[in-house]
Length: 174
Image 1 (cartoon, rainbow, N blue to C red):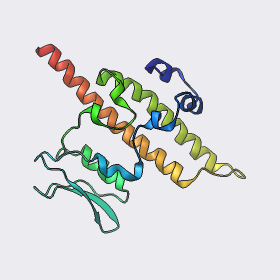
Image 2: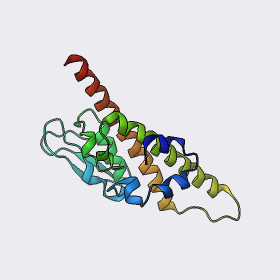
Image 3: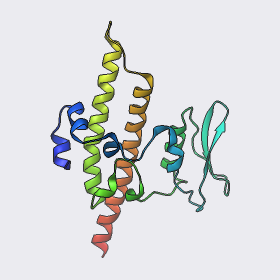
Image 4: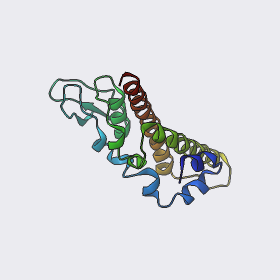
């Protein structure tokens, strides 16, 4: 599915169904196993996700840098990855949304606009369904996963924006 096809879709269910299996859509990503996607610390070390009180935090054992804690593991990892003490990962190496099939971070970013739209629509639909009397609301895990996927999508858009800007700077300099 091309970026243009993703952007033209208004119906998120149709878009996901037309995009093939769920792995093709989200990539090798499990919201409960995001500890695999912790970015390196600026000191070069790989930090660890640790239990702290009722929640989680990512800490670098080598230099002591730490992210903002959260009740959710995926959120603690995301908080670390967005922190200035974390290295910016290469957009192609992120296993999210199968970005390695794109030729540039700009193409991946455009694709992610469509993915984000689909996730926002699905989340809005789920929240709307939960308000309707007599209707079975979506499962908590489903809604939790949508929230997590959306948060990671927004983060990955930022990573692609960073690398897109960097590649354009290199073209101007070179």
